[in-house]
Picture 1: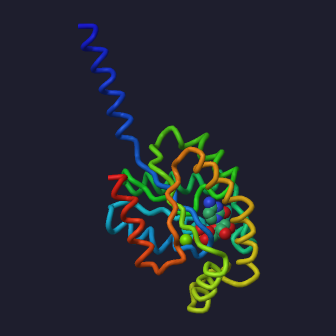
Picture 2: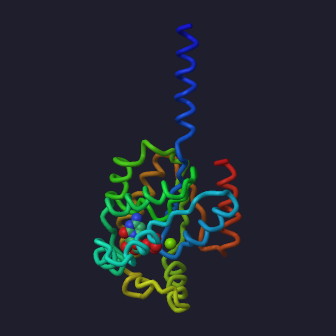
Picture 3: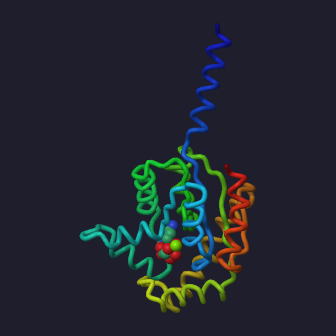
Length: 210
Ligand code: C5P
Ligand code: MG
């Protein structure tokens, strides 16, 4: 009797652990192809794609947004918005989507992002891994400038903002990737290849997550 109720308790715990929403973080330099590849993954593997940058741009554009101006300043400067704002936008979007597996693209971007996530969200999700789209600066910059020239409408796809975005990436985001590397959670893909080839490599990784 005692043993069977204990076993039921264990089974319940195991259930609730497996039922936590699953999360894959997608990190890489500006122009590494995070948005492009997340769309591919979403279609092929049924994840909900949440881009921290897109959520911030959406919040910035809301009429009367309390944080609109602050967000725009950070975006133009290539610096990182306070985590309370970004994390609550992500949390809200997760609930709203009703999904249970998420690609969180462009987050955590610095130590403060990581700490905010750890404090508020980490226990409530199951982190499957970190997809790292590894792309050298020249290729990344050329892609963003190309995107800007084609009319991406982004206030940060210009040479001045890009330089700062890259500095932030090297100084603040690389240490986060290294942190997850130590935890053996990072799946690195060479993303200077064509989008098609990058996705071939990504598919091999995501098949392991299924
Ligand atoms: O990922 P994406 O290139 O769309 O990000 C654009 C900008 O949004 C970043 O350069 C940064 O200013 C802001 N951002 C942020 N915190 C994040 C993700 C993006 O402040 N976690
Ligand atoms: Mg993006």
